[in-house]
Amino acid sequence: MSKARLVITAVTIEKRPVSEVARSYGVARSWVYTLLARYQAEGDAAFEPRSRRPKTSPNTISSDTAGLIVRLRKELAGQGLDAGPHTIAWHLEHHHKTTVSPATVSRYLTRAGLVTPDPAKRPRSSYLRFAAELPNECWQSDFTHYPLVDGTDTEVLTWLDDHSRYALPVTAHRRVTGPIVLAAFRAAVTCHGTPASTLTDNGMVFTTRLAGGRGGRNHLEAELRRVGIKQKNGKPNHPRPRGKSSGSSKPSRTGSATSRASPPPSASSRPSWTPSPASTTPGGRTAPCRTGPPPPPPTPPGPKPAPATGPPTPTTGSAPTASTPTASSPCASTAASTTSASAGPTPGPAS
Image (cartoon, rainbow, N blue to C red; front, side, top):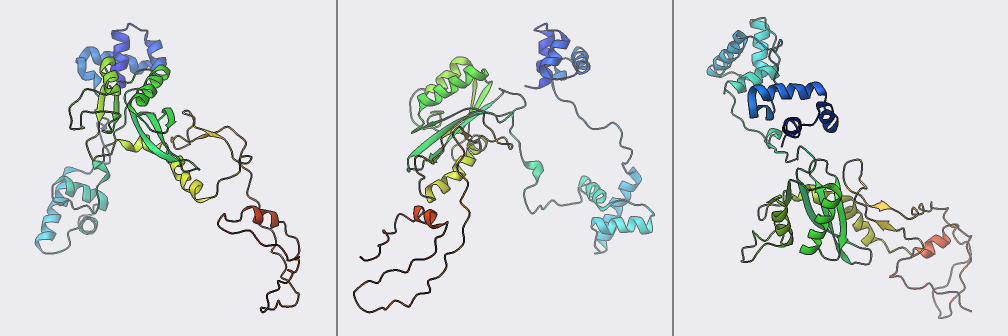
């Protein structure tokens, strides 16, 4: 649904003042009056977006120059010579006293159908951006796995507004089930209103239409049908809709590898973390919110201890020799506390 339809409907059907509608939707009053005049003249065609192409283009080349570009292309190609945009631009400048950029020559050759498209990669114009135009027009949902420090596997469920990419509720569970998805959806509706549609993958917690078996609707499908919300699901083996909702928890999933590789901190130095649905990074992705004290900064490395200068220790004999005391180092306590768990205890000096 376009913003023009909402503005016109608010004024013509809801009978709201123009000033109030302009303030509510963040538009100018003159634009509201323009929409109303267009609606009275064109009817429902005023709801559709208009072309933004300018009526005149002063820098456009003449039709004679465009025809000359096509003629040079055919003449050069017929003689077996190079007929690329740079060559044609050179001929235009030196033989016809007309300056045209190679990019313009290439554009007119493509428009005339004289260029066979053979891109090295997929052009950006073929990408389809599936983003809602208005808030609450479409919600996306998905869940991702998050391993804790002790190895426990949890699943983080996210509901995301497709327009603003605002994380509505972000909840963690041991396992995401149908009732949990329904409870999170109802909580989001209570706080942010009812969406016009939802977009999820074809997981069993979201839909059973594509499961291939017999049975009724699951919890979310029944709720959406009862409220009148359009449900959209991805095709099997086609996980494109997962990108936005799963990407909202990417910082957490990236940091989990470090948590598994490093030894777990002690209870006194471990910061407390709680997920917050309103905590977002500058890039628009959800990140955990720190509620406890910040972690202590890493201890800078100190000077290396001085090497022992005593006599060499004999290698024969069974009697152990006392180790030579070395100079104290500020890293001694840190090195002792960060020793790998697989290493055994260091034997003390023989008495």
